[in-house]
Length: 426
Ligand code: ATP
Ligand code: MG
Image (cartoon, rainbow, N blue to C red; front, top):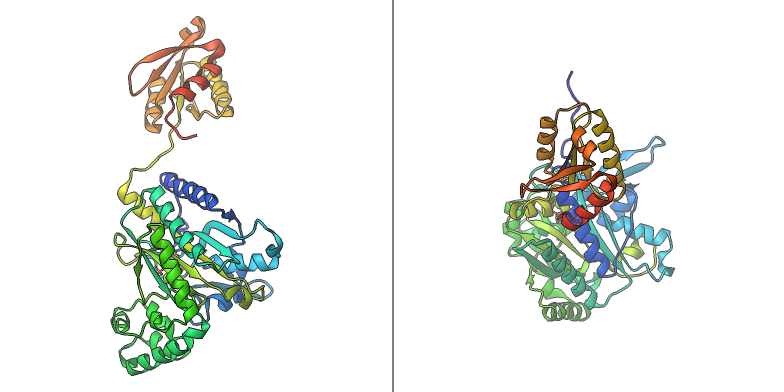
């Protein structure tokens, strides 16, 4: 019979690769929590309008990429395409403003966008997302980029570049928008249909277009940096100054706008040259008007998201994997020995030792093969002889030597032994 396949662009993360994911997740939690971020988990499904209103109606995400569907009562829902809007919603709805601990949040989890699947681009993918509310101090902008760098360094990912820009505020965007519209109008024939259409409603989107021809045109477009009002210019100067003091190198990219409409002032992206077309590892920025636009208090916000699949692709290119192996394997000959091993395995596990044995009635040879395949370094071999003399050999499969284990206190002995000798992370 034909088997049922997974949905296109949605991946299984297999045990063989899970070590990478766990490493990335553990490092993310460690670094983010050190910088004062607290975990929040919001639903994967939200009302459609949450994203239409925040990300912007004429963005790629809202126009083409969202998984939207009516529920049984005809209300429009969507699988979340990103986490910022959900966290802002939760902050407003749960009245977190009154909670002194709730200023910096992070979440790890799947996002959904209906894009053309390719290396580094999937329909279900995972993000590490961080958001901070209520602080407009440019120190926080620099801190967040510094944190991103610390995180990547901790993972051992090199060769990435930080690009920064300022998108100004609503005030400085007005004259810029006019100037940009005039520019696009002149070149409308050379733009892709999307950009031509959007040039009236949302001209900034043309900067984010991936069509080569549009990219070329936009090289000559006016830059927002030349239009910044005094406050925005000062804010951006301060961000750069703090980054310099934190010895965090950056490049100013006056044409980076990011794919979501809610960004204001500081925006940034972490770029790699090692993933082909999917060159953005992560990105983020300020969204000072978003909370108010979504019906909440007028609090500023800043955040970023990192794509975990892309991070892991980078890690796999430069580092060896970390497959989890059992610490000890118990092999047996005969029913009595097998029963004893079964008990010992469970007791060892209960004490936190990753012990294994083979199920079914396998011969010693096949048990040893299994221990080898699993990568167990130590193997205890228990047979009738060993039971009679109350001791069994524990073999070190790498050093090829062995020690005697007293059976009366075997579980204590092995727990202690593994604690001393295991190289496994606990
Ligand atoms: P891109 O320009 O590559 O489409 P984006 O600007 O749409 O990225 P963001 O919305 O800023 O991406 O999301 C932050 C990060 O999430 C990206 O830098 C990327 O690493 C990751 N990401 C975004 N979309 C996908 C996807 N479809 N598959 C895998 N990772 C993704
Ligand atoms: Mg995208």
